[in-house]
Length: 109
Image (cartoon, rainbow, N blue to C red; front, side, top):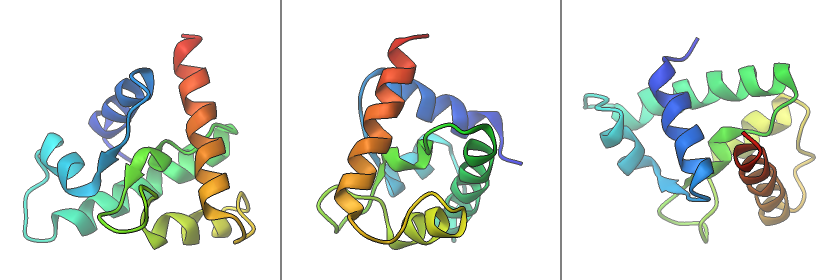
């Protein structure tokens, strides 16, 4: 189970139609290093599991890797495949759709 801080930060970010780098998110959550990104990744994957169980868009889609044209890291796509929500095809299209659904959901709150 993830702590409420991660979900709250990502929900707030969705309301602003924003994205965030993994390092900045780890800092915002005050996740201690070394290994802060690995700890964050574990929390993000747990949150993806919760989102999938509820039929919600993946809040982890708001994360962007340093490389990858603003897309999440490879582990995001691997988790989405494991959870049956992504077929491994158009990564940019999948992320754009997830982000659009997150922004719409946040705007309707």
